[in-house]
Length: 138
Image (tube, rainbow, N blue to C red; front, top):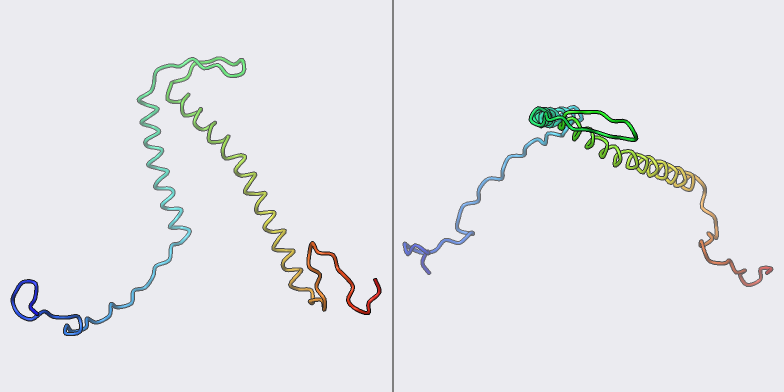
């Protein structure tokens, strides 16, 4: 059998010398400070874009809200509307997260209490009635 280029016998993987294994590399763990740094860098870029947006949309807009009337630059009015919309999402979401954390804490506490109690000789199966065994009073 010849090689694909037609220049002699084909080499198999067994004929080729084994390459040395790659050296082990240290894994660098991500840190909280590194995450904060990345978050701040992204926030700075977003703020620059917001500033450009506000400066480019300087036309005056008439705003009315629950009987209060006034004039704001269009960019500021749109930014305030976006912040208000974000708060409408964040506030109930925060409440749900707190609710789930409390439920998880309660379940961990119940699990720890159940693990600390010694097991009973005849554990009851939840949801099934207990029938007396032979020779036991009914």
